[in-house]
Length: 256
Image (cartoon, rainbow, N blue to C red; front, side, top):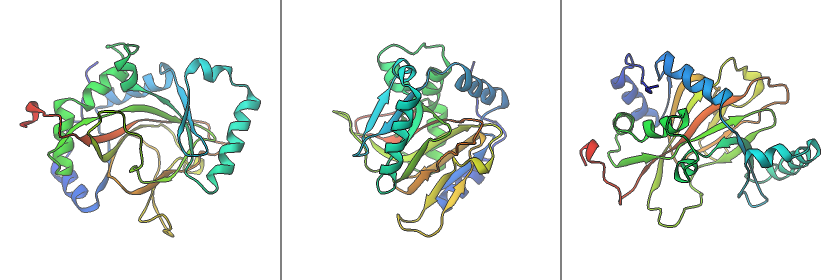
């Protein structure tokens, strides 16, 4: 299936809003057929991995086979330890699918939705849209992954500036991107993306998970994903990543 942006979007209005606020939430970003295709695949065909932080905030990953071997007692032990650490430190736990890694190692089928989304967000149409929205003409790529937050999952406050670079990586994170595909979400379930002006701010701006919604915001900025409550009955599905610039990459298709 071809990934298609909603042709009725008012790009001039979106650009003006982003220029003023440096973050934006765009409803109905994709055509309805595209959104349903992505949402259905996230919910029914994605082989979810799990990641949580260690005591230093570094990732501990489980592939689907490893995740399936964890007992209820082991999962409870992980949750207890994370909640203790999260009281004072940066911590997180959620499900994910490593799209770019899977493409590199040849385990993601070229006709799969996740492969198509990786091609789309790095393609001419979306990258041109991103440059026009943000007024940053040096953007050259995005590194997407699928994510799923369920009951007990969370991501504490951070600003996206502290991350592990791979050898030879000359890129910089400029904007965080979240494509939301969450249906029938109750605000009582948590899972909101909350933005703060500083780490000790007394108030925040919070956006609920949504369906066929694109969120873009400039980084670094303090933000978190609120704890998903034990009584949440749905999952918070999205495809996330960062728009990056990289002085070693040129995009002739975008006029570079």
